[in-house]
Image 1: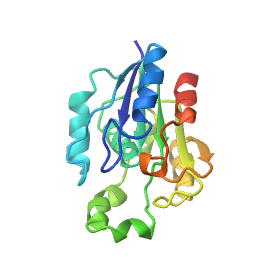
Image 2: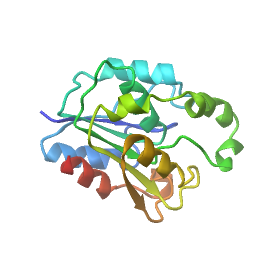
Image 3: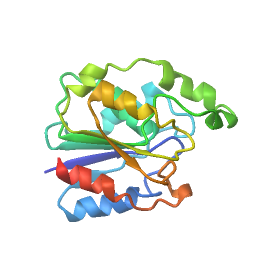
Image 4: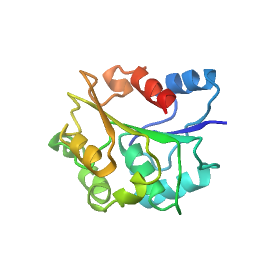
Length: 189
């Protein structure tokens, strides 16, 4: 059975935004879907999130897919680079980042929390070798992520880049309760 793991973002939760919608849509098409509540979501750390993913992910094969949002995308990449020869069906990265805009640092503690995520290298080749199906979705007016980060994901992972218009950070606070492009990409894998 095809299994999708959805990894929410920093400060996020499984029941918000477009996550319940995509879960319902995928389940109606026969997928098993898990949206784990990531630990310490207001102060996420690489080790804590990747270790938790290791506990939560019960299967890892060609019928396993990942969908990440924001820092959840990095958690997926950093999880996959720690797995011995991971082979998955594909991944959709929604608002992934390696850099952040200055507005993020206006929130107390954000620069310190994000620093390891921004500065710890990723084994891009290992991640890229885990699947031939990688899509990275960006919004042309995301207040937190420079659109130039799309080039990193295209260059390092060979990801298909999709630019959505006017969807900001693609989260509930920006009015995004459905993301049809995510469903379309998962179904295309």
